[in-house]
Image (tube, rainbow, N blue to C red; front, top):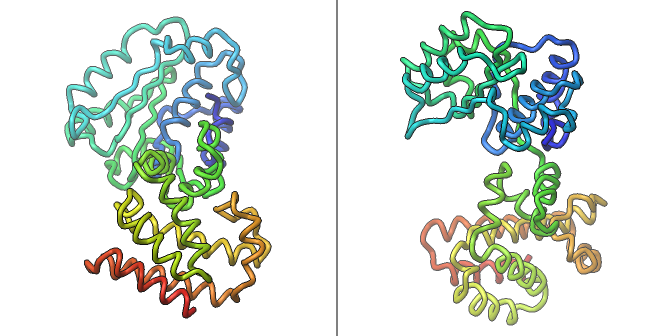
Length: 325
């Protein structure tokens, strides 16, 4: 994977490309941002570009070093992750020993430290001494969810590369690139933050079934009250869709929001894209304020369930409220 292929993070890419293009590569970087923002993927892509012999601002993917990297045969790339709950002093000392060996032909060595915030104080101080005497042929990339959890003395010796949450559109595109169907990716991208969380959500039992039930309930809730009650009883309470009622309600919230998106002409924002024809025919059944009221009823239903009201009772009351507007 090249840096260009990593979703989003235009600012982070710009900073890294500048270093590659001008030859002003820092001896150490801190990739800081929320989980699921592509820190590890961009770190590996950047490392690949550092080894690339083409001398461009991204890996060429064709040279010997790029091919070695892609096949996992780059001995001058070292990756370190916590041993249990933390990164320990012995791990940093071993890393330093590996960095001191003669390299395998290229002029640079790279090491990536995952979850750098978990370093023990002794490990962090040992790494600090290593960073205080930078060697031009060694590049450190520290990854963390929370840059403020890193020792200030370490932060002062690294270049900060900030990572921001991906937009729903970027998330959906990244998931689709992995082969996840568009309708599934669009839904997950509005319900979870980060690609990892989206994948976990999609892999949950009942995710696809819950989406189908929401479509049915969304349609029936407008004018077919009896049918909607039966759907709650048979396809929610007695099925996998009822195992996580908050997920069902979160999707139902998106359903009503799609009605507002359609009225506003924001067709690219519609989540239930496979239902666009039906949405187009019914979006004007209520005013935007009317759809907002529907969303408020859904949120209130979620509160009742969290307060231990029976899921069936809470959903049936929701249907009554939706009918009344």
